[in-house]
Image 1: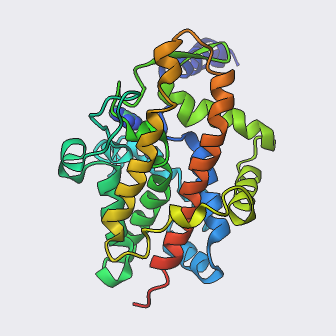
Image 2: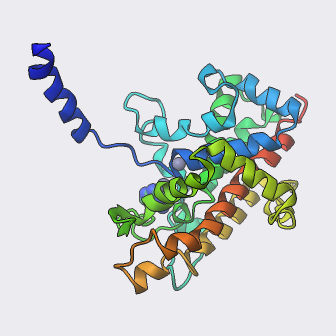
Length: 297
Ligand code: ADE
Ligand code: ZN
Ligand code: ZN
């Protein structure tokens, strides 16, 4: 007991303050919500194929659990995905939000090393007609389950001040950064309306897509998927759609009222955007997997 208090306790307390928690995209809860919405739309046979592909049995065959894997490995020293996979999570547009927003692949995504290029490449790897082995297809599916979320987060398709990571803000009385409140704090605050249970939130959004306020828009969200050019056309279309949110909304309060606490009316105005973006990510992922995994090889 004595050695615990004198030796181990100080080491433990020091480790708490000295190990930074990883910066994750859409935060864990946002990605799980996207994965669960997608799962709700999978045809039963496709859900079976998904479960079959995942070699990591801790995912329990669930897209919600697999969807956070890409953020874990990018920070894990010794992981084969450590470091190099980080730029695949975003697309740093060299535009000028909130004045003008645009995506230009030559300008913003050199060598395809951005979320648009990553979705294109992992789509090719998952497609069984291209002959990749089971291990490669498993990894491709994990990355896609994650990047379908990232590409709907406005600040993941925005290069200004590293997607807002360098912008200090106040959120519910605490200091934070603009990127992190979009990834995490605002999603967690929204989740409180659903008992902080991502699957309840996902079920609510699923109903909105099926028969509620998104029912009339959902076909537009996936209209690119049946195109023969889908692997390149879809992620670019979706990146342009997401990037545009930076102009009317994301940066406005930061530029015009920088001392505002963003947990108030900014958060209230962001809720419909967060709901819609997570819904888009989940629905697209579900429809895409139903299509690509239905091929017979
Ligand atoms: N790092 C640099 N730019 C970023 C962005 N837009 N999103 C997440 N991480 C980033
Ligand atoms: Zn992020
Ligand atoms: Zn990410």
